[in-house]
Image (tube, rainbow, N blue to C red):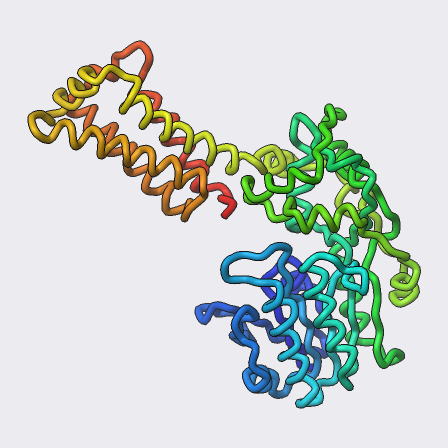
Length: 419
């Protein structure tokens, strides 16, 4: 069988690629990058490719299509309507016209008639179209999918590692996470299945658990003592935008409040084996030192962004309005700047500091901005070292502290900067 996986670069898609039974199957993967050198790569972009003819060209000789494309929140170039509805419908139309043998659609638990968020509504629209076709289809509706590299797993690790545990509302929202290995096992079972013409399954773990209990399990896994719980009202969802954390968006908190659980028995009956619990998978062993470090540092890029931004903004304010003006001018004179240039350069430099601070907090092109900050501080430090080296001997260390600041910026550049 020739199997085409759309969304092969995501957490779920890449796990499917790695876990598919390849003994009698050839796997083709999608990629948005024309520089992708992986074998059997088909170039396409779900955010742009809505043409049935486009997909018909890509699906030649394909027997099974797996749609694993999904986003948890919208961005400038990625919209729910495009990725979850329009492109999948065009893909399904092409599959029907080419008589593709099977289509496996990875939808979402909650994408039903009661859907109220755009995430669920957009998934449901594609599901409804697939049901209307003559295709042999499987619609799989996973709950939260967890695994070592899962986005949701990393978030829960980071939340659990905080000195104060944030609890949304009362923390009693039901979740039923499914292990990524069981999801991949389900995909393989769908490919091999010859009993069902069409099938829809809720993909959930063996047991529902509350949001509060889940954070407690992650905290115990990290070998941390129970922490003070801070209740966060749902209306604080705007913090997700500030923290650049999609999982804390308004829609996602609404979905959390609705709950995310279902009966696991139909899935176990289909697989013929019990589903694995979190205690049997991710919590089987205590976290390694590297995992603990990653959890402790999860929010550090965000915190570092705000601290760095504040430093630049405060430096601009102090330089322009709080520090004695004549001493600021004297410092410029020390490095050889005097006369008509001293005033303009003073205010240009403080304006630059202020702009850097604002852009840093806003997260605008942060990786490039961090490199620019690093270079600016190196230039500042070099100029003062060459023309006013006595600052190295100042008891408050105005230059030597730049070394620590450079190290913080370097660490943020090397860490996974959240965009």
